[in-house]
Length: 205
Image 1 (cartoon, one colour):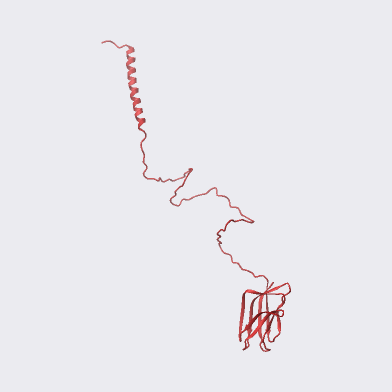
Image 2: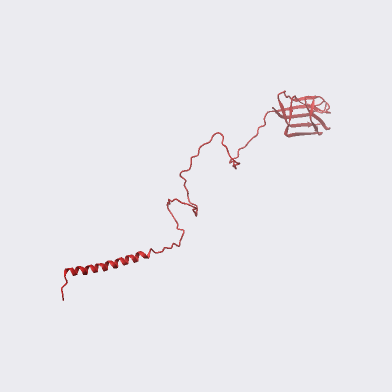
């Protein structure tokens, strides 16, 4: 049997090395071509706890009542002066205040006993003032109905009839205005024993 020379050993070793490299490359190509495994998640949506920082585009559905903190809320500043409002807003007033409307003028009343046909001044009205009549009270103790008038000077402006044996008060939701002269009262048919009393109430302006 012929002995192998060193050159022959090199040729054999090279052939074995080529065979090993060929097998290794074939296995790498086979694994790479197969691709990754398919994964299916069945319990969606996935619950998320803790702090999440994300830029979100679109709609986000929230289940339950989370606690939300706003850290960059604008500061509230007091406003003075005039504020313009466009449109007609709905305004709710909490703790509605009690508002009392005070009628202008000075309260004045006049009282007179009528037992004749004369005219008797009740309310003095200067040339620059006016009187707003709000109430008239007449007491007639006689057995007869009595008639009377209110005058500005000598001009009759308002007539009244007092039933026998009664006292009545007439209030005016819209006051009667008297301007220009004293307010005078006179009985149309009173006798000396009539003793009818008339009280006028209102305000001088």
